[in-house]
Image (cartoon, rainbow, N blue to C red):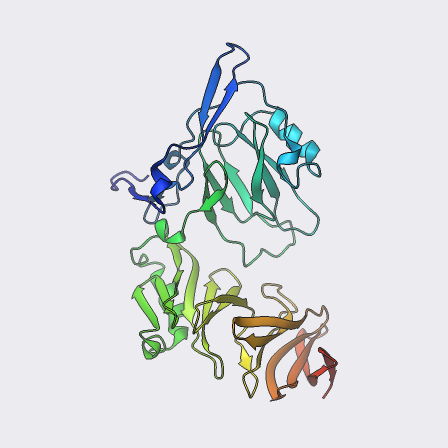
Length: 384
């Protein structure tokens, strides 16, 4: 915590009457003394700390007692992945606890994954707990129940993942609970040196686009965009501007014609973006690649994202079928040597789209029109 700042504000989540009950207790004989050693797991609903612009600290989430006895035999039957990861789990437990007092993190990396996967072993009991698959790089400590997830550094020549973001989670003794971004992303306006970046990006919304959709779409604070569905469900999008660093900013991109929903774009400062479609009735959230284009009758919509060079965005075409419960992905294609852009519906079963390829001699995009046509229950690509 910075000198001169007020101490952290503790936000206690009392989600049920039993939230104040004692945490789970683990007892195991100490081989040195023969006496029971008591380990209290963190409560099922942790006390989350509001740090107002500073990243959560390990000291804010102390782990309590540290296990110093002989590691228990790993209970491979306590988790579906136990036998498959037996060697890694046993090795992690044998080294002793390295997380939250009496747990060990067993990590591995699978081919084709951008980050490590891991499971959590209770060294005192041998029980295996869920961790995370394809996590970003993680940092943790023996004396804390906090885990810090951050995007790993890319390999030489690799493109950094535009969707990799920083996050924090607290171990409860049975599961990881993510710390909401609004507890640690700063609530004060950005510094003067980064304000032009924020204002320039925000200007892409248009001067009145948010106010024209009020009260469904509001900006109650400079770094928050709130979308409220007819059902009353609220979707809150929080910008991340920490000190002199702009990580991402959210832009409201309107309600596309023929689509009952609102599009929000998360713009990453360094590279890339992600779009979200908020269902206007239910508030359901759907990640999309590009602004959706509705069919004439509204039974489907298409998104087409083209990126053949940088690799910051998906190079993908997706068609969704509109259902009462929300959009359902009907078809997608991710070509390697071409991409699609600027789709236009001809009718409910036909889309005209620009097929783009790169002329590597000039490094220019060459486009030709093609048709996407629904035949026999699937979509095919054919010349226009």
